[in-house]
Image 1 (cartoon, rainbow, N blue to C red):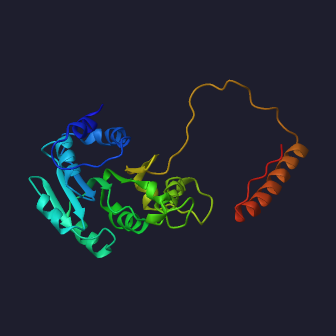
Image 2: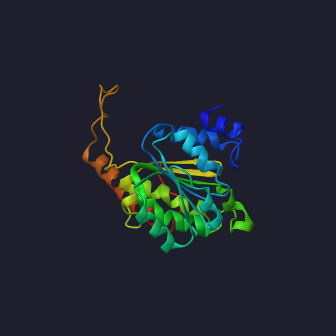
Length: 257
């Protein structure tokens, strides 16, 4: 049992509501921030228990911020915990909050869990994450719940929206104008999907390149004559044309073997 789960199990302070498999995920991604001057923003204060848990886990140098639509949550402020009252689907409000905060090291979206709320919060606040920070959106099972606007492969869910992150992460390797290098490509190191959680970890990176070391285990293939080279070139050109057409229609590739 890690320290976060231990706090949860022994909690006799404000109410905390978490799924049982979240604790190992938290520990894996949050551990490197312990006992540092870390800035935490959690969307969804509820009863205030999780803000107290983060304060205990990260230590006295942590600055904890919360967002909730319920005005009563303002009463839950305490030392090193500040709460903003407003809707996470209100872009103007989120921009106002962002202007008042230093770069955010950890953002936890545990708010209303509707598709619109999750997408707007990401679009407005991801740019506020520090260079080596992370964005965690949890309770993504609502992307499959009808009550929250979800459904399997349903357009507009946060799960479907986040699948575009994978393309952006790999955009350095794109050969098509439809997938271009963007700020996400340059600033994100990795994306981690778990049951009901996605974690996006930031780290500035440039275009990757491959290298070789060591001695070859096999000799180079036998040199080909001009007719063989011509055949290879024609095969390559034909395959290129065929596969460009298939790619345009997003159909499976074709290779002669």
